[in-house]
Amino acid sequence: MQQVGAQHLEICGAQVEFCVDTTIKAAFDREYQLHMLPNMTTTWDNEYMNAKQTQKFYEKIWQNTFVSGLA
Image (cartoon, rainbow, N blue to C red; front, side, top):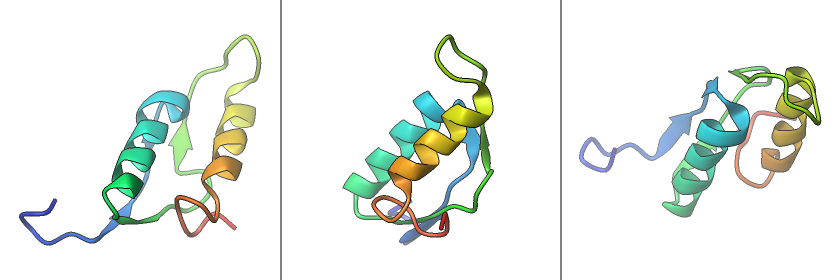
């Protein structure tokens, strides 16, 4: 990303609680500006929450702290 001069990243993906969360936090730590629209991720149901609840839970964590566009 640095080689091409990227400063802004658009986020989407699968496995909200693993891949997407790690990508967001690693990119934020590297000072990329992150943007994501609602419902651009997915995951599986787990023993605590269904997939939609997990997605919304993580979107609330990321909103206004790590990414813009989720409000």
